[in-house]
Each structure stands twice: as structure tokens, then as C-alpha cells.
Length: 185
Image (cartoon, rainbow, N blue to C red):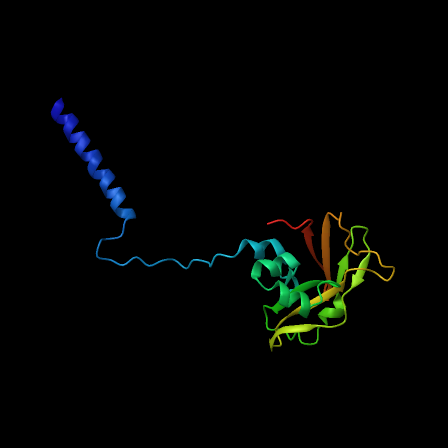
């Protein structure tokens, strides 16, 4: 009886070692790492919104909030360069998956900031290009005034959300990008 018990234990141990050995590479064999995606900074995720690539064109909008530039150590330069005391600043990238020519699409006249009341305000008609090397990918800065013609804040301090809308890109009527306010990270 003891002998059968010892044999059964030995067989279980051998089977366990074979199962364990299948999961481990041989000692003399190099282990290749699978392609790992680079880790993104949490701040990028907080400020970035990406659409679903409708109409074979992807759109990415980054809310270039003063906190974003402060985190990146670029606050003083950005504040001056983009006049952040007067404007809400966004970085926009549009990219065609099928190599469509996007050079004729006027982002600055097709993008709007929307209030919680549903009012829409157009961007300042000035596209500040960041990367214009290819007609199928465009990146640039779009700005919106912080106050309307009556001097009221477009996005009040107590606002719960912020919405950016891109209209008519690749025959998609509207692409909506939303952030909850206040921004936290």
C-alpha cells in the first residue's frame, strides 16, 4: 500500500514538473519579449479624446488646458505663445486611414466649442500648424475665445462639461469630443 502511494505521489510530481516546464523557456534559449505598447502618461489620457475613425478619418482632440502645459513644463511658453489668458486652446490631429487628401479641410472653420446650454461658438479662424508634412495627416492648434461678445465666460467656472464638435469631416455630420469638468488627474 505504501509503495502504491509513493508511486502515485511520484507520478503527480512528475506531471506537475512537466506542466511547469512547458510554461518555462529552456535555460539556454533567449526569451523574446512581445511587442509591448509604450506606456502613456496619465495626463495625456485625461486631456485627449479620440473618435471612432468614421469616414475612414480619425480625429484626435487634446484639450491643451493650462494644467496640461504645466505638467509638461511648458506653461510659461504656451501661455505667451497661445495667449491662454484670452483663449481655450486645443491640439487637433486628423488622419486618413486610406490616404485621403485632408489638406483642403478647414479645421478652424469646422470646429466649435459647445456650452452646456447648447450654444456653439466657432474657433478663431487661425490654424496654427504643428505637423503638415503629409496631406493625409494634419495637426495643429485651434483656439476659442474664453468670453463671448457680451463679456460672459463661454465655459463658466461651474460648468460640468466641455464639448468640442468637428463638423463635416469626411462626410461625417458631427464628431463630438467631451470632457468632464473640473479636469482632474
